Image 1: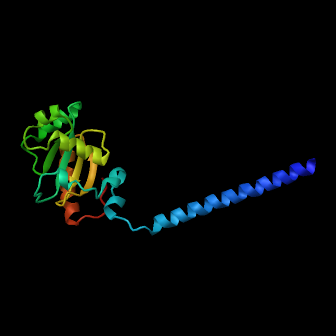
Image 2: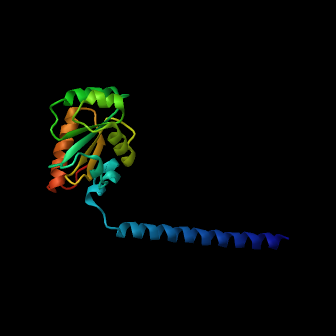
Image 3: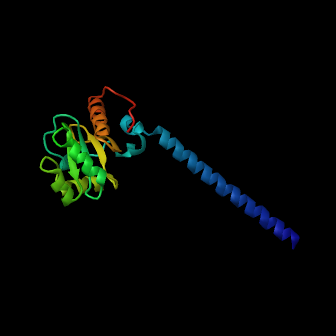
Length: 174
């Protein structure tokens, strides 16, 4: 009886070692594939919102962008969004306001995107917080993105977008 228990424990130990070896080999293969994959320098250096780099928004933006722009997602439920729209009114070259609801579309006025476009951009990027700024290049591809709290943050992102879209700055962080 005792020898049966010892044999069972020995077999179970060998099975556990085999499973552990399989798991380790699988993790090693995944790591090698990850290291071998070519990287997009914009996404690699973009910080917590780097996964958004490269997503195409051309179909939702005004046609004929001549330079990089910043799309500002705003919502009527956000007090800071109302303040930012007021600060930017008429002073924001290169900023496209993208309201996420009809009430904010009215507050933002003419010059911005429709509420449908704002909701679609938020859905496509998975953005759930506002105010949120997205820098896009002339082709409509996302080059940087981050939550913002002031018009100065938006100005900084606009400058960064210009630099990133011309390729003169490497290693920037979103």
